Length: 471
Image (cartoon, rainbow, N blue to C red):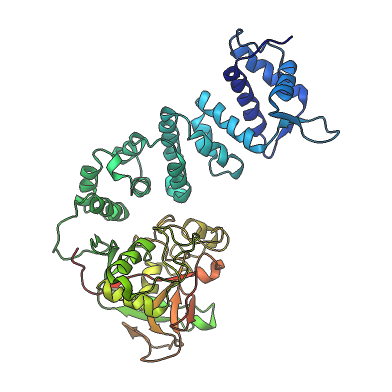
């Protein structure tokens, strides 16, 4: 008669088996002899008072017959594995925590086969979470795949600030890494002692290379109620947060660029445009939370947007959708601003680039900057999860189409200064593409147009201000 066994010891051996199986992509079962050999090595590591013995084959049989967690994978195959893949992932995560394998999982978290294991491992130990986040930041995940790094933070049982502060205080970490880490801490600022003082140090710097870092530092200081001094003349790409609306603005200086593209009849001809006056533009498209402030202020005067109650589109940090052009204009007027002109929009989207996108012509890089058809999963995403362009603006490519001020009209060839479109028309311009768009539609030059009354679940807008906001 087999004696009772220690369930904790059995789990540690099963966790070892799960990790071994998971080492090979899509492997959910193995030859019993191989699994028995792995089990035997695991049994050597547990107490001999566990009641499990040292025989790997016998251990497998007991687990199959007494717990049901192991099963043969198919009729006649003779291969043995876990009853469900979720059991294998859970136990592989358990093994990672037991053996301090955070570095391996942090390096593999972007691999779909390993992602669930990595995320499950973050539900166990505070010490392990601290190590994982340190390894994750060292791997470059924060700057390369910020939305995935954000998901790791969101699903972790414990938030450990030390690894993040270590990067921010390091003299060796790149500016890009520091900026990405600071963005991860938005919304968690109260859990990070000393973060406000550090942000004030970043803000005091005049180094142009710290542009994105200073912008995020401003947002964090606003969240802490420690906004930078008001009233000074804005400098190029300064960041200001408006208390009333919650909108973060970036100051865009005057400039000149080549507008349009010869790749589309709708974007021809390429022509020179001069923007003669600086203006503020929202760092992100207007979010549900920000639009909600408007609805609350207007009480029963304004109806909620279409899809306001749809769970796919109504999270606070997702861009507001289901607004027509008139809705967008009314919000902008309430917020003390306006919609950007089409020329201003393209000027800001390009951010100095002459290519199809803010980063050039290599569309394989779009996944780092935009939510579009190939990676969106059929919905909008929280604003700011993807990389900013060179001027610190997020989601200019993808996520939601954005209404512009102009009526749609074909371009002319002449050089233009501060164009704002014709005085009348039938359709208003939209720019940027959306979560449901092909990559071409997300380019800096691509144009679309709808009637001002159209409302869709892929259309939102961004707030502009001609005069400096007074937070």
